[in-house]
Length: 392
Image (cartoon, rainbow, N blue to C red; front, side, top):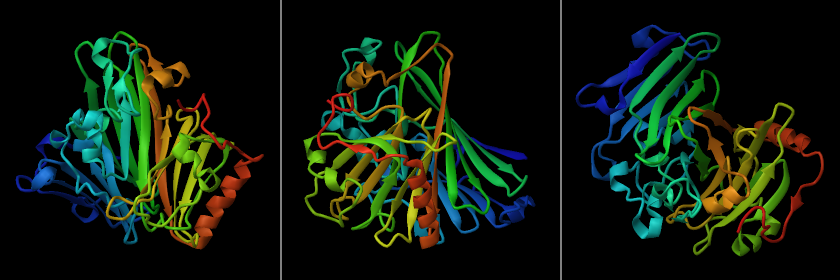
């Protein structure tokens, strides 16, 4: 195994071009000898100063954003992009995102990633958290701070054992005086020969005092996986509409519309079922079921699943979000009442993560769908109206 250390704040294509390839290093990966790691710093507009790491193995590529909380900006396999087209033309440097703007909705000004984390000390809607651990934490903004905090270092690890893999690790601090002292260490890994990446996170409370943790992975997809007549599948115990707007579409909560001008978002809260290995598999596939993408996670660490349907026009941002989390994205005070806010003792860590994989044939999509059906031992309870233990 070989480790290459890159300091994110020092990366600059102009000052020090960084393109590491299998040919230049002599490191061969069993699954594919055609690999590279490219680092650059963007210039121009609201992207100025954003550091980017692009990992490519064969025809599969993942673009990471150390400057934006180690988020995943996009992925591509065989020329097929996995993400979505946001009206936000990013990636946006956090310096240009005012979290307090628009009554606490400023997080949306920087939102265009394939995967963005929501947390760490809070997520969900903005407002006042009367039950906060300290006064400095009482005013919360949409989806927290972590997606707009830069990593202070990035390490690239190349493992040539077996098929071979490339991992990018970054450390992000969400710390303040008289408030949370949380540190995220995130590793994104690609394995040669697979069109899949995994995110493995460890969140540590660096304080000697207990603190609270909320974390949600906002994984977002557009065409070709999302289209009219496309489907969402997951084995589940219960499906609950978040509010009355979501209740209007409960009969078709698992089916998507084509781009629909004027569409108002709908969110569904799901209690997912895991397989024998404790893993939850979700599948989004297109209308003909020959293009699909899975998001997998362990229920023991991410027990809550939210599905965000936002099938408005393409220009406005045609997208769906598959969002595993430690909690549902409600007001933090409500989630605390339901026992879904994690309390970390001083020095304690919490481990969780997700993996995302593309399935680019009808047979591959069919196999995943069949595996999900095997996990559904009995029909799920689909509630026609919001339920008190799920949402306000």
